[in-house]
Length: 74
Image 1 (cartoon, rainbow, N blue to C red):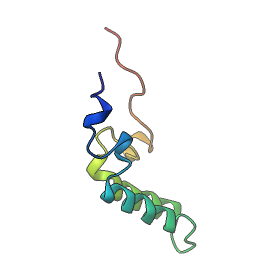
Image 2: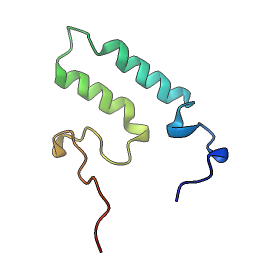
Image 3: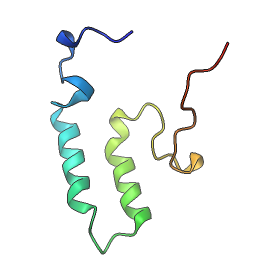
Image 4: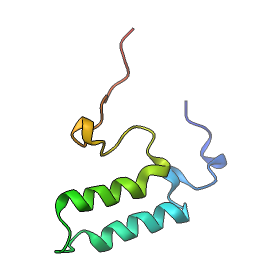
């Protein structure tokens, strides 16, 4: 169960997290950089989101996809 939104210090999905905002904005600035390959761009995004990435987004061993998308059935 999610915590009460009134206790989310950085807002819903950490929308007020300055470090996350900076990481997203840096990626937006680079998205059309012709000197970066897709792989280089993906690597940079992977590095930037690392502090919040507890689920393995952009993990090359999973071909940059989530390993699991639903809860396991018991």
